[in-house]
Length: 419
View 1: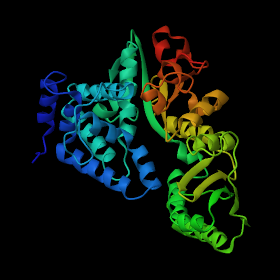
View 2: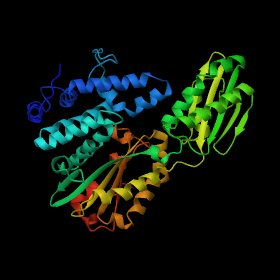
View 3: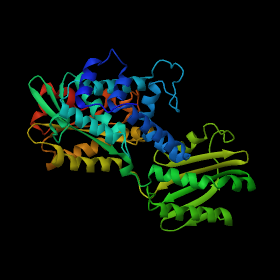
View 4: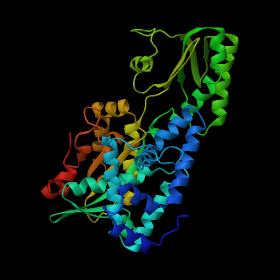
């Protein structure tokens, strides 16, 4: 049985095997505690297997934890899996972030180690997510590669900011914060997944009686929210009543439902690629579902009553960060990790320049007086995606030209605008 290790023991262990004695992945699990890690993986796998689409959403939210377990060579039941192929680019990037975390344990004081362990415990319990904590270490590694000395002021001194970055004679403090895109959506993904699970459970007998291909178009005029069981019950009842009565339209101030034949351009006879064609038809903000059986196909496409407001959510997060977490004694970088984003939505945000607009509007406000730059990135950049769906240099950077430190050349790698 794994014993709980003291902070001094953990510090000595990290110093004894920073890279050579154990793989980085195993060093990380040792620091967390084998029992804690195994219990968390079992919880994630159990919750992911409990339902169809809700389980898929949960797996996506905890993709990092599951990826680490795969990198350890573990099968879902905890046994050793067969020898794996060469790590993917995403696994290599994840390994580098974990190496940054493990290496940092060898530099922290006992107090800093205890704070890190507390952060890990929160990230690996309840609704916590490891990806939010790894944002801190990915940011530290990124700036170390750019030639900065990195000091973990949040861990060592309980400072409101996370990092102090030093290069030549210049210093800047860095605040790492995660913004969930869900806060800017009127339709929440877990609620949509739950709605789909409920409706599709009723579809097979309905399609057996009426073979064919059907599309349920939905407008949620009042949105669709997580943890609102009463709303889901009411919406489900309306759809089931439509199916029982044969009605093709049901609308009120909360939602509009319309059942139509499923007809799309291209080779409509093929199931393969049907989801792609639905995405092309309804756009990146639509919520889609597709299920098929021997007697037909049931698809659903939902839109909110208003467009997504992710950039506005980012702006709101920026407004609250500086007063709470910027010291005012040195220039500050607000480093945002935009979570719960799919590739098409992230690319649309970049192409539309909405994030740039939100950041630059923020930097004209009094709240940004001590902020020299705002940076943003998503999982696409965290895991090394290249091409038009990811920002160059691993992040979007927006410099505050009005700040006196904006012209300090030593800070340029961290603050110079990327657009």
